[in-house]
Length: 190
View 1 (cartoon, rainbow, N blue to C red):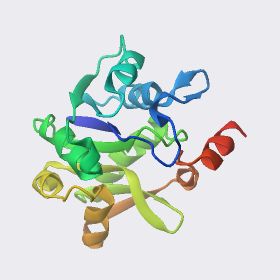
View 2 (tube, rainbow, N blue to C red; view 1 turned 180 degrees about the horizontal axis):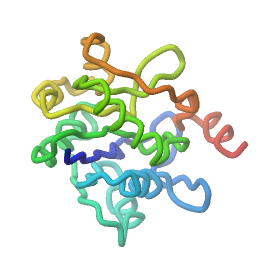
View 3 (cartoon, rainbow, N blue to C red; view 1 turned 90 degrees about the vertical axis):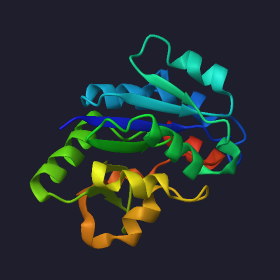
């Protein structure tokens, strides 16, 4: 099965007050780290959706085998970026959707999502943390039209929650850390 990855990295990071995509952890920008994780997991293609600060963020991806998709409508919401990414990877059999602000995501987790899909046969596999399902999440081709029809403010989680009987899960307790606020940034450094 050909599994691609979409790294959503277009947002303006309003709550943080600076581009979270460019924050460093372990010596590299979060956006570069997310793309490398997808590459290491064997995803192909790896699509990175950019919007705000696209030139600065794209520079962090230099030398990586990724495709950059520019979302001119990024300010409308995450759904616009998700649609742009899915539209660029329609030849994949499945897509893993991930965010650039979850620093605990690694290639092993993405491989576990793939293994859970192969073992369960479910069209969706999501990371389970904080009593809920979320991204990173894998969606098979049968879900692409539904992903493409999500509204501007809706992320992939909306589809996971709308069809719980079609979702397998992989435990990911570290998924609770994402970088949205200055407090989250401090927790990243701890």
